[in-house]
Image 1 (cartoon, rainbow, N blue to C red):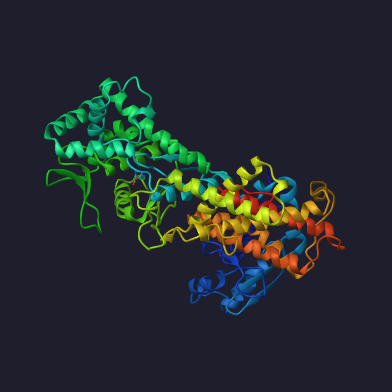
Image 2 (tube, rainbow, N blue to C red):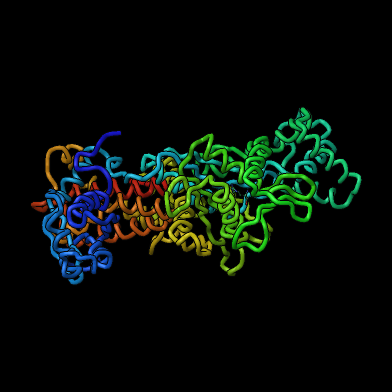
Length: 593
Ligand code: ARG
């Protein structure tokens, strides 16, 4: 990884370093974290908020400071000299307002253009993370909840990867459990030649699941055979293993159609993978005295919860919780992940709370008051609703076929694009390949952005018209904004690749400065989105950036002005940052629309 010439880490991280050094001189007796934020008032760009908190800690202890303002003054005075800072002022109860140096901001932007946006990656406190997302269940429907998990999880993975964290993208598919006895037995009976036929011949697995369930519920002898099949599968009998494999293969092929359209990469490590490790992990928990007998089951009692966490069912079988405890143990001890993140609907929150608590009781996770890592997080999200305000379903069918949903997004975006191009008489400039590529990028991007722009905890309404509109905070609008910048640069007939090496950026106009400052906030926005696991923070940034660019472009003439080269470089920097935001959101940027 290339070191950045203008200092690594976000602006906030760089200012924090200066503040830490100042705090050590100012109040050597107290140990505090630096508090640096973007300035809320108009007297600075960033501010340091440590003084008030420090005052309450040192007053009455014989300190020579008279009030919080005096501490603020001292913090400002003791900041090591740096070319980041233009000037400082101390306000009210000790807020230190910091004005950044124009030339430093300009240099940082130029440096990014020359050395690549990777130099703006924030520094995160971990090296390796597990992201457990998507995770549908074999032979059951992959529903919009799994779509949300896929979209949110992929974005988080992309943001961590951009920030130089190694991410294990885990598809924790539900590929184990008693339902497989029923499925295998049904396969044997319905397709006696199942070993020879291809996966397509078996057809749709959801229908297959329903039919086998129907048989299971209606025929006690079949039920018996199905129950024996589970035992034989779990005993590792070859024929049963092979049938299980075949069923998983069919599901996998279906899931892959969705992942391919969304351009999402996942590594499958399903529930079955952890199954062999369960007994030894439960033994460790038992040795710590955590496992108790309750009504024939083996459970862990957890403070603050009415019901215990069941880890061995009454019939002796393992369950979702025993698998998740084992997977966590594996991720911590074998894979040595420092941060383990699970993306599912909020409905599963209690399950995660409980097994995280169990892991803490076992001493696997540190007391969060003492150490921050390793740690676990459940990234919950709300429901997807239809325009009727109920759970989202397409047409009258019971389930939404995700592939069809995505295909519809693409075809709708294609027809809108065609219509617009025809109206403008521009259709002749487009090849069929460009049309396809663009309608995919715009259509799938619209679905992703509509999901990601909301705080993930809220429910959101799935609406094609809204998400494909070119007005308001939509991916389509943002794609247009980005394509427009590309076209400004193209029409200037200047080679920005050459300009960025030969001419400098200046930020003398107030709207240039506002844009420049917002551009360099990119790293801390990614940092915040990662720290709080909130992709909408990045969406908000992308939208605001495009608004700020519009303001700049309205008030500052670019082509033909004396500042043309510097302003073209600002256009280019905005386009680069917007593209990186799109990348991180899993959206393919388009250069022409
Ligand atoms: N298969 C589960 C479901 O569809 C999600 C699994 C999430 N991951 C986990 N480690 N529990 O609801």
